[in-house]
Image: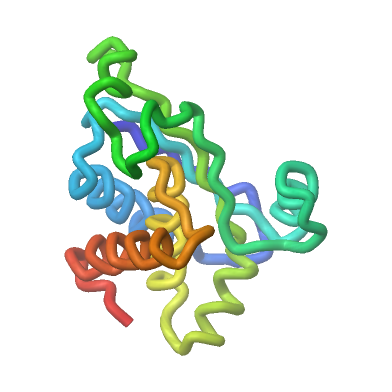
Length: 163
């Protein structure tokens, strides 16, 4: 399991604990979702200006957002989980490159205040949310949203990071 965390923003200071928690959360999500242990994921912490540019360029939405996910592989089937066909495409020594999760720490700080919880809890939620998108989960339809929210809360509850 290779998880790379890179902090390229300077707007929010003292993020070492957030970075460590993000590693822990992604590891737990990978285990709970049954992801190939050799899989690779990248998490990048950015500021609002950076994520705004990405959101505009890749989604056509001209404003900052909290988290973006860029999956490296399209899922083989429509089910929101890593399946054997998907994992078989990769050499066991290398593992699948799942993709990148981009999190705006500026937005995370605002949302943590808005939802009355810690920055750590907010970033943990955003990391899990972004990670589940890499696996094919989505929230475009009400039924998809319910499934994704249940998975998010189950992963966070397993780490005692409830609301």
